[in-house]
Amino acid sequence: MGFEADVIVVGGGSSGVAAAVSAARQGARTFLIEKNGFLGGTATASLVTPMMPNQSKGNNLTGGIYQEVLDGLARKYGGSERFSDNNPGWINPELLKTYLDEVCQEAGVQVFFNLELVDVVRQGNQVEKLICYLNGDKFEYKAKYYIDASGNADLSHLANVPMLSDPGRQAMTLRFLMGGIDLARFAGWIKEVDPGMRDSAVFHHPNGNWMLSTAHTLDGPGWVLRPYFEAGIAEGLITEADAAYFQVFSVPGMPGVISFNCPRIETDTPLDPLNPADISYAYTKGRQQIARLANFCKAKLPGFEQSFLMQIASQLGIRESRRIKGTYVLTDEDILACRKFPGEAVAKSSYPIDIHQASPNADKGGLQKLKDGDYYEIPLRALEPQGVENMLVVGRCISASFVAQSSLRIQAVCWAMGEAAGAAAAKRTTPTPV
Ligand SMILES: Cc1cc2nc3c(=O)[nH]c(=O)nc-3n(C[C@H](O)[C@H](O)[C@H](O)COP(=O)(O)OP(=O)(O)OC[C@H]3O[C@@H](n4cnc5c(N)ncnc54)[C@H](O)[C@@H]3O)c2cc1C
Image 1: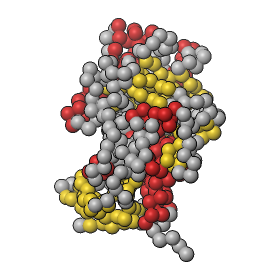
Image 2 (image 1 turned 30 degrees about the vertical axis):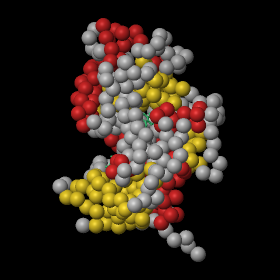
Image 3 (image 1 turned 45 degrees about the vertical axis):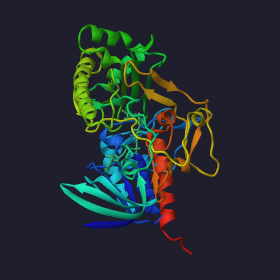
Image 4 (image 1 turned 180 degrees about the vertical axis):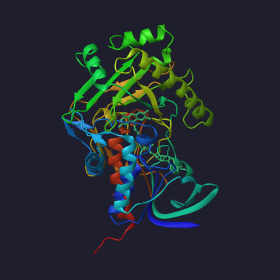
């Protein structure tokens, strides 16, 4: 059976939804192919919330469909909230799934769920068709233009686009949610142990909700939660690896729930997110770490007395795997010098270089901020794969150095590049009205 469109987007995460909605709004008949049974990608399947701030001098650098979706999600479902720093990206992953269905429907995007791209037929410099898989059957999908928003660059890989990859240099994380937490009590305790808000942020929203985050790492002295983690290790509740990195956030529309950006799954030899055995090992190890961390929180953190493990992400969080080689490769220097690309920029980002250590034996990584108040731009050329003319690539797998990718991978930036690529694809496939 065959299906035909003007534009086909593979992957319904942040960049893919933005690309599909943008292309459809420009009049292109648009398909969105997603292997999960819902949209949102890493934001929903891997429970990555909140979206990190992308700001310059207090102003948000991503507007467009990103801002529109967050506003609509807040208005219709109470599924997003703005933090005191003006970041609008605190999201509820379950409500985001529902709202993204509506956004795609309204734009006229035809979404195909549980459909996985498994092969690509290429004719010279063109992708001719995609082979997709559902329940033991294969289906052909054809378009004039394709957008790879698969995160792992599956479409580009299958189309033999050259790659620039260092899989395994960033740690993978299996995220989880805990419920039954007394957030007011937890917020009060954070303010007590971290009065200067060195490692934490607490905002009592005018609507009465507690918004908060706190973090800890075993690296370096001074982390305010260190004594609690040391006690947990001494009592055998958690291991040093469990305590290596800890970060938590409240979730809009989920009273009493905390989202965990941990455990980081560190191993002596870094795990490769493209290796089937490593992926399976990471899920198993991650779930064991989560069980210990949940016990530790219940035993040691005020507010967690009645807490319970509520949800483990169905999809491992992969920060970096394949990156394509495009007609331009965004470099470390472009990021650090806050380089602009006049006339060809598709996104702006001020987010720091952010590398999560994959192994105790690997580079420490960490955060490196950009020039205060400044930002860099991403040119369209970094989305254009070498050797294929009817395709653009968006999201965390664009053409960038390892270091540059560690900054541009945040969701707001993925939304911005998706929106620009969708519009560019539509323009290249649909006749201009006269
Ligand atoms: C643990 C972790 C913590 C993070 N923390 C933050 C944070 O706090 N804030 C922030 O803003 N960013 C954070 N990030 C980064 C950010 O979440 C991701 O980089 C971003 O969401 C990636 O968006 P994307 O559109 O490129 O890909 P994704 O959101 O991963 O979407 C790709 C989609 O493609 C689908 N797909 C893949 N292959 C196929 C195929 N063959 N056929 C069909 N469908 C396919 C997938 O199912 C998925 O839905 C974090 C990432 C991780 C892993």
